[in-house]
Image (cartoon, rainbow, N blue to C red; front, side, top):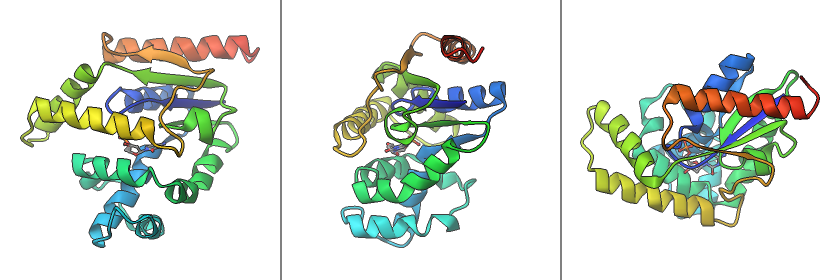
Length: 212
Ligand code: DC
């Protein structure tokens, strides 16, 4: 079974995807990390994010990025990832490895922006995770300050809004809910309650498709 989890930044989709992978004993891919790795390698070789050719060149370098590198999770890299991910050539260069991951025997859980629409439109269960921008900014702000980094809530909220706008308005695989995706609004849910709800949604899909 393939489970597609999509949604905007700080919606909780990563936590939910990881929990689903654990629950169903499936491998998990955080596809945002691929775009973040492109952004980080571009940044390290001093490439120009305004130039799609340099961004595509950075895709070839992502093998040199350590997935545990703290910088991958930084706001700067997230922002840069959002910019380079708007280039169709960058998306194309990352497409096959995501599709291959989704196509492996036994299935997989992938989370990102375009899993249910482009990477795995055949997924047996699709969840579009969302939450209000204010709540997402609050969560992100907490995460950042917990890392010991200074941040202003208003700036985090402005960044979240800017990222939403860029991710949703780009021409190439924009952030949209797939028609057949279930909506999961985590604004007023604890992590445990959100995970529980996600499992219920997947179970309902399994039953509807006769797999259970
Ligand atoms: O989920 P994230 O914040 O780690 O993703 C970083 C950026 O990468 C995000 O702003 C847009 C891009 N991205 C994408 O375009 N498609 C995906 N499947 C995953 C991420």
